[in-house]
Image (cartoon, rainbow, N blue to C red):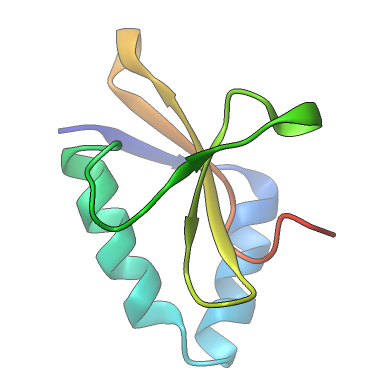
Length: 86
């Protein structure tokens, strides 16, 4: 099992998710990646450009869970839980 570490922006995003009713969906995704960060389904994609090396999963049509897996430490850094297009 992996340890989750929420970065500053993800902590701010968590408040927005709770306010718009997406908290339960995110908790399900977090439970999945905690056990296996590359489990399929649900779909995921490796990001490119400035976010290269990060992984993105859909929360809904607009919002994404963006994270990085550090295998050597069994750690997952959660960077965003809102949109990664801002």
